[in-house]
Image (cartoon, rainbow over all chains, first blue to last red; front, side, top):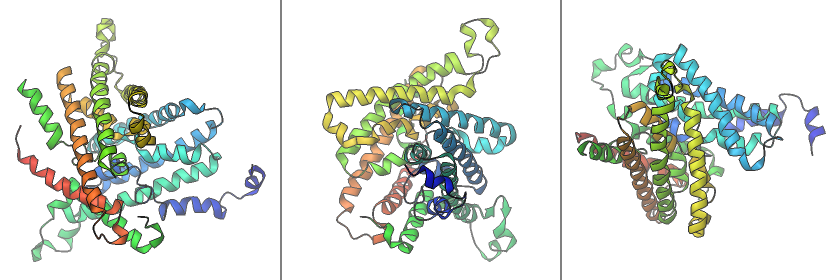
Length: 218
Length: 205
């Protein structure tokens, strides 16, 4: 194996940095790998829950990847899915209890979607595709990169939906302050409804693929 | 009886898993290329939901919720195990999915081959865990209510995936802009279908 080569690598070598930049850009979990969309779309009507959700996923995926990577040689192949689910579920219970204790309002808004981080396919996907075969440090970077890529899309969608749907950002009245209502603007209620999240994602995919033609497959 | 019917219809159309809550989107997008495979996956989801939600209900009622262990001994009245529900539900789901996998492999090898990796991935289909979690959150009163909610949600998911698969089969022949082909247009069509389904919100049940 290439163990000797890897040991000489610095912590932020070009290869390791690529783990993060790729996951944000042309290997983005949501728009390119099409993973973890369920929870991504449901929490994006407001910016605040979207940010909390991204941080929770960052935590679960970052730590989970390291744990799986440390255990990777001891997990029997046949029961690996159950082992992975147990690791994820334990981390998610931790996140859920912390949120309930310190950010009860947000955890009410997120309702079942904190629990659904367990079935967020990004996490299983990264466990299967990366940390089962890599050392802890690259796995950690991969987890961080992927959850940043995930969070970025979440925050972009939530930003536009909250801005146009309610005229606010993080609860602060933007449109009222700049006086848009005085000249006759009305909040676009459609943006808060669930289907707009899907259409917004579709548009982000459209923009991203037009800028990176190599992503176009069929 | 009427209440059961209300829950059933409501969970198919109004609280549709795909269009109202975006649950199970990953497999919804990945497996909806042909109607045939999506019918298979849809049926598997109905089956798994129809089993796991009632089991989850019983577990919630007799093990997990605050004071649920009182049937064992009256001194357990203060025990609240609800923080364990994620791990209990996921264990039930993982074992049921294993069962479905074995059944499908035995009785329909062709379907088994065409579903491939997505059959075991039902275990991480959020619609399934979401079903159990919504059942817990909405506090259904009886086992019958939980079952009718589970079957309704499963059928709603089935309708959604078969619908999008039928549209995608046709859209292959149309002239979609290159960057939008594949998942891009699927997202947008799902959004439009979601808007159509929102008209059911007007029905008061």
